[in-house]
Image (cartoon, rainbow, N blue to C red; front, side, top):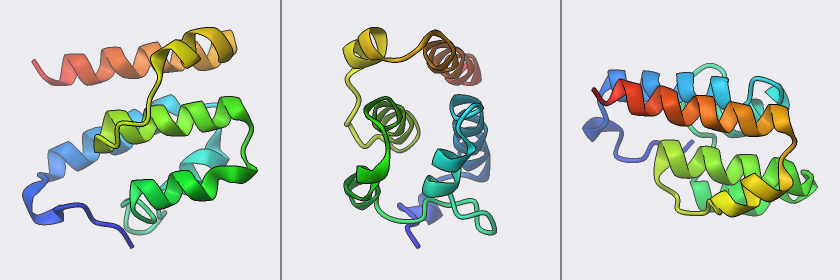
Length: 107
């Protein structure tokens, strides 16, 4: 199970990341379950490995996975232009809501 510098990440940061992922994947619980272990609430694996294992997902779902990993775990996969051009309205709105949520948590 992947725990990126778990000792250096505060519980509030982990809670914020989990809340952000729940918001982002509101319409895609299977993606959330693919990324997060239900008992430990940690990533199931390293972000690079998770992204490589996402081959069974649609292109839009892969974009959502990239965004989630980048926003919460700084995995640097996201191409926001892909989100603008390829996601449907509901998923794009969830991306925007997640960005707002994360921004508000910084204040």
